[in-house]
Image (tube, helix red, strand yellow):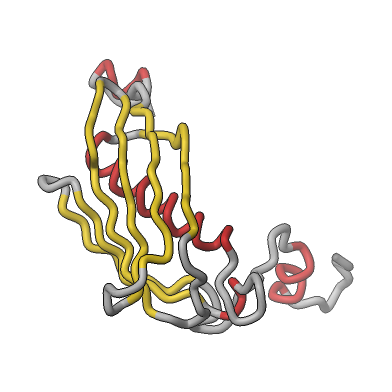
Length: 156
């Protein structure tokens, strides 16, 4: 950051950006749409992983797949139980995911035990013929913030 007279605000913002964007182009990262049914405890996500999520040449990185699964399970858990955190995530990678292939993720609530939510997830190709990954997750419902528990606002 130079801060010299004559520097435009946009130049200064670009120079001081703490977390630069790694993905600028459409379709280069995660592209997805999510469908949620809270009463049924189910979520479906139609997605495509772009080239910036590459691991082995031509294939999606396992960490990108884990992110997609954790985000989907977390979204379902949040919708069902409110504030939650991931306690455990277990993924079995069964078949490589070619980049830019269309995938269908199906997440479901298996059971609820007190504050614990046990969820499952299957990641299929769009045709439903190849199971790419299976996952289970344990999410823990968090206590509501103290202000919300009293029913009042925080005084602001």
